[in-house]
Length: 318
Image 1: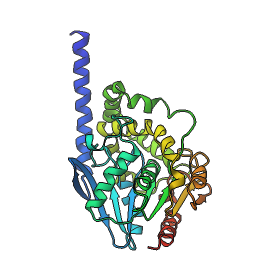
Image 2: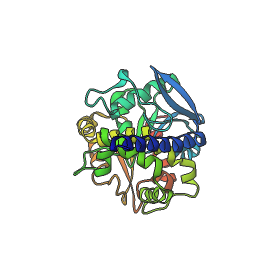
Image 3: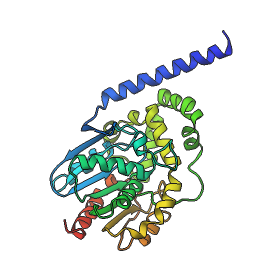
Image 4: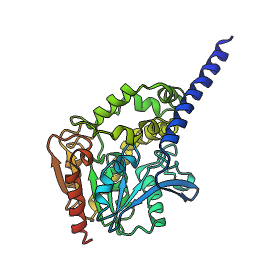
């Protein structure tokens, strides 16, 4: 058997193993909301509760399931909560040419993502929403406000990636966002990454706190490990920095009430690089510092995040 044939056989077996894991994940975690066709792109949305509109946008390597574990239900007694999977993650597809940004046709910028999600929100009759974004979703929430400054009641930014950072994001993001990494490395991860590695990664995201009991099973990490989701996530994250450079120049134009919540022990999106400058960039922004808390305040201190949403609502006159 020639080397070329061996490589082809290995690649075929690898892709098959990856697909088996993907099929199991998709069967175990089907859509929990509805799929809206937005100019040929399926956007997964879920609506809970009644009251002023509150849009929630999840972070990198995630889905709306991060919010539906507990926080969305907490808020649905007084808000109409609108949950959306971001492009390429959960059950939302990546958009076609109608929403492609000019900077990088291979990755959806925060502004491109915001426009797609806004179109889905329009379909649901969302008006003057409070827009909450966590982590990477914070960048999309900021883009939402910049795209529709007169139709956004308030912003709530939780551990938000908002400003350029020094250095790079590490080798794995570079490799996984490349064509070669997407073709060779990602299928290996999808097919074979073991549960102890998944649990270790989850622990690092919640550090120095711990993930709530049952969170991992509810969240469904194998959905994030699908090849398409990993490619989308890596490309979006790896291309984010130039977009926050561009957007940060426009933050002073944001006039809607803005509440910022960030843990001082967050090592994934450090407060001194992101939220502390952001609080100075947006006029009237209010920064709540959560001492000793890491990257997941909406799970570790949900009352503090809920209070920020309520303050934003009062400030917006909702």
